[in-house]
Length: 284
Image (cartoon, rainbow, N blue to C red):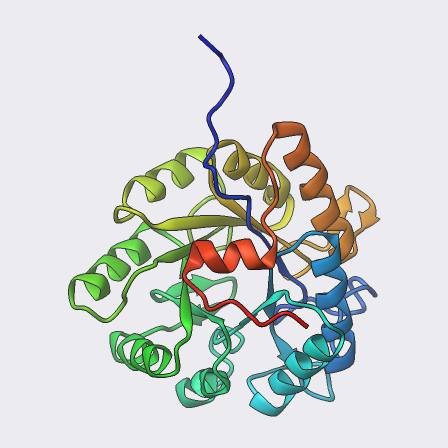
C-alpha cells in the first residue's frame, strides 16, 4: 500500500491579491496602485502561475475606491495583454470607508468572480459591516450579472451565514469559499481553526485559504497539503521573509515551486474555470 497523500485530481488554484485597501508604497514600493500598475502586475502573476487575480483599485491619491471605471481599465489592460487570468473584483470597499451602493458597483461590469464578504467583523481599528440586507442584495446582483461569489469568511459565523443564504436559495453552486484568517477581530490563523471551518462547508464546496501577515505561507502550505487552494499577495503580506520585502509575482512563484515539491499540479486559468463552473474564454 502506498503511503503517499492522495490529492484531488483538480489542480491547485493560486489566487494573487495584489493591492488590497491598505498597503502603501511607503511600506513596500512593489505595491501596485495605478490601473496600469495593477494590470501589469496581474499579467505577471498569471505568467508566474496564478489562475485568479483579486483586484482592488485606488484613486489618484492612492486611497481605496470602488470606481467601476478604474476596475474596467484594469481588466481592459489585462485582456489587451493577452492574459487569460481570471479577474476577481473586490466588493470590500475598504472595510467601512465606502457605501454599500458603491461597493456593489463593480458587479455591473460582470467580472467572472467578485468577493462576497459573508458577515460583519471587527477589522483592526474599524468595523467591517456586511448586513443581512446588503448580502441579500449583493447576492441578487451577482446572480443577475452572472458573477461567481467568492464567499469570504473571516470566522466560523460567516460560514454559517453562507449556509443560511444557500438554504434560502440566494447562493447557488458551485460554491467558492475563501477563508481569511488572522485579521484582528476575526479568527486566529491556525490549522485547527481552518479545519473547523472546512468541516462546516456544504458538500462539494471548493475552498481556499488566505493567511494574514506571517501566517500567509504556513497556512498556504497547510491548505496545499489538505487538498485546498491558496491565496497569496501583497494585500495580505508585504514580506517575502523577515527583513526582505516581496513582490506579487515572487510570492506566486514560491507557491508554484512548493506545490511542485508536494506533487500538486498548479491549475491554469482554463482549468480553474472548469472547476468553478465559469465559461471558458475563446482562444486568441
